[in-house]
Image (tube, rainbow, N blue to C red; front, side):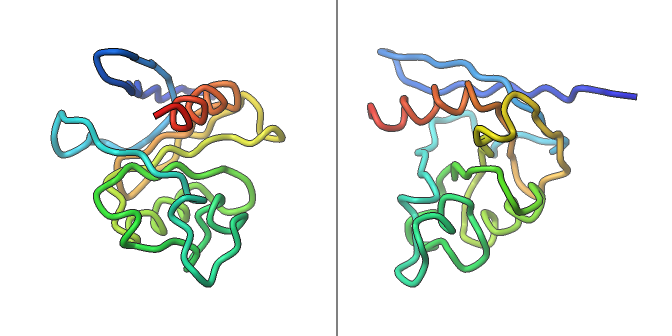
Length: 135
């Protein structure tokens, strides 16, 4: 039986509002209804890590000082979504958005994350990265 576990993601400020939809089995939400800064894995790269490992939010690839208190944006590819959530949590992220790469396309996965997190499809991921690059 296929089931959806939709979660809404709203980004923006008074000038720009973007609404995305993802999948998640996390039972709660962010601690407060306030804007949280976003950081990509690449922007949070640890000094001893490759950009690609940081984009994928692999273990030991992130600098906790760059992640703490932010929503971490990671690419979905080789590592299980739940594992990426644990890496994000260990790095100090308040939440995580897992973005499908082109090979994963539109299929999203509802996973039991350890922090507020969602998997979004490739198309919405392009919108998200465009938003991040414009702010």
